[in-house]
Image 1 (cartoon, rainbow, N blue to C red):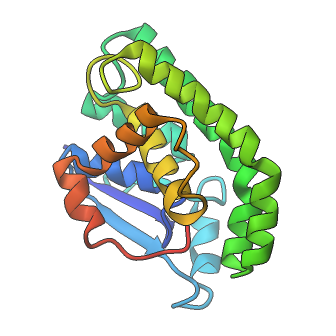
Image 2 (cartoon, rainbow, N blue to C red; image 1 turned 120 degrees about the vertical axis):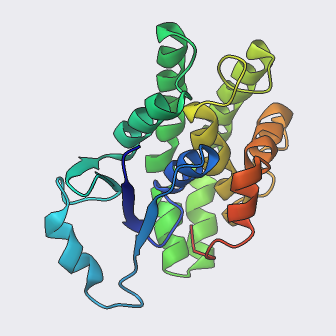
Length: 211
């Protein structure tokens, strides 16, 4: 099995679902967290070493550097058999991840306000996008209803569940506890992902971060 080192900031952000995927599969990895608030200039040191000047990046066997969260996710999904039972299921997984990924730019101003510790601005920015985010969560709710297995695609957990479950969990915890009140299937998915044994163990001790 390859050795893995995951570079990301000391936040959940776009790296947490990758941690979930590795943990759930029982794959050892180094969780390398860049935190310039603790070590000033740390990101300035590592940024030039990243293939696209961004993180997350997955280092494989100490030599190959794979950038971009969704590309890493697809690679890990193939390695861990969480990319659907066939090509069509894999395509549906991609579509769901793309839909959920579309939420990120909408909530970016909310996230920035949180890092600025400006709660008034956070609430103002959230008010601008809440309806759009709720609409997209509604699409996820319908997908879960239609699939009927409790997972977004097929009959077992997939990359889409890790991505959506972790991201929506963060929105509920950090931004708006009521955002899934009208989406019971999504709420249940969030719970199912968080209660997967290795993920549950990790959540109990993971660092507390802004987002």
